Length: 115
Image 1 (cartoon, helix red, strand yellow):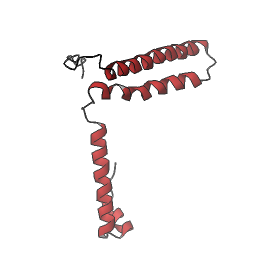
Image 2 (tube, one colour):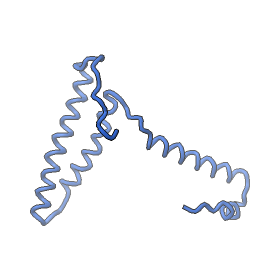
Image 3 (cartoon, one colour):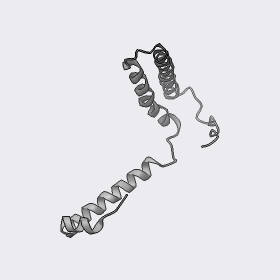
Image 4 (cartoon, rainbow, N blue to C red):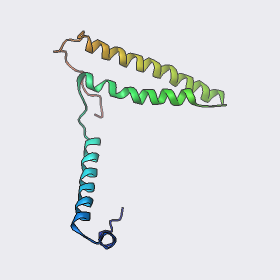
């Protein structure tokens, strides 16, 4: 990426208002990227429902796929079955946590290798 500050100053006239807006935009982008790539993940029940949209997207894509190849159709059917099971299990886990069936002092599982 090539930064062209002299050209930016020439186009905008280099006044304080434009420079302030540009600095705020750079700061907002930097903070957004830092938050998006933060290694911190929500714990407990808060971390479970955030994966439902991911699984639902795969499910919708597989259901709406117009394929002619039978092998690809079998793969899509497999995705549909697997994602339906996953979303159901996630929703069941959330309701289990919300019902208070899991002890509050239960220990979490260790991180997977590579995490």
